[in-house]
Image (cartoon, rainbow, N blue to C red; front, side, top):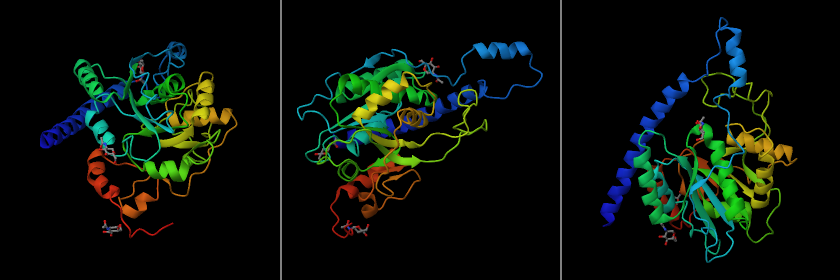
Length: 339
Ligand SMILES: *[C@@H]1O[C@H](CO)[C@@H](O)[C@H](O)[C@H]1NC(C)=O
Ligand SMILES: *[C@@H]1O[C@H](CO)[C@@H](O)[C@H](O)[C@H]1NC(C)=O
Ligand SMILES: *[C@@H]1O[C@H](CO)[C@@H](O)[C@H](O)[C@H]1NC(C)=O
């Protein structure tokens, strides 16, 4: 039985990798055929007029009443009362295996004793190719785990801002009594115990206007067209980004999340979700709070038992690696130096 389950998980993982590659490649060819090249000087003026009226391919339609297609209105109202921490985990529809690994490792809701954690996976609509198959898998998976939040927009990297904002909208509507919200990507190592006890401190009053993570103080838009994070000047003309917390994982008080959401109805949305949250808090006149030193690492660091017990998050971990390291991470190791 256990073996069968392992095999299923493994199969799903492999499937994810394969499908991910396939979809990735399709997307690649699709986006590169999109309008990302500089117009040749010979293109007629009419083309520019046309472009001025047509939305940019990186433009986001927000605010917009995207529907919750798979929803759990009562997920947050568990027997343990208002969650201390709501985890909004960003995954793509086809990543069945990734979600299962997260449930069994850092996404486990009962990992931190006496602290109520509520975890949901936020995702959009599958790519048109295989959409029916993936949708059926998703519904099956949700029947078993009841933790999927599917929102009615196409799930692409360029739509990640919509995913985050709709996650926050879900919080505002169905989980307004949470104390803190974590936005986290699926390719990270997370240490929920450190996050809760050393960053958020449940014994203290919930901090207002609180957001933390890995803080970028002085970054600039990428203007080269082949960059993954290319930012067209027509969508963001300024030379600098605001101060912001890096996308792989940041945590904020629920009250600030509500204020950000209100601001997001007025600030023009851009596809880099972390920069966009930075723009919203800048408008609110709020600066991120520094986390404990080196608690959030955006550069990969190899797993080491003691070091990983003294941090909150490390970017760039694959599900297979999480499965491998998790049993060791869970063991009590008395040789670690006390801080
Ligand atoms: C979550 O953690 C608890 C306590 O450590 C454990 O008993 C449970 O099996 C875990 N759940 C999953 C899905 O791994
Ligand atoms: C974002 O989602 C909308 C709504 O489904 C879709 O029309 C649009 O093409 C998507 N944008 C990108 C850049 O993927
Ligand atoms: C405890 O951690 C240290 C340092 O990471 C490691 O060398 C040692 O093998 C670990 N001991 C146990 C019992 O896991």
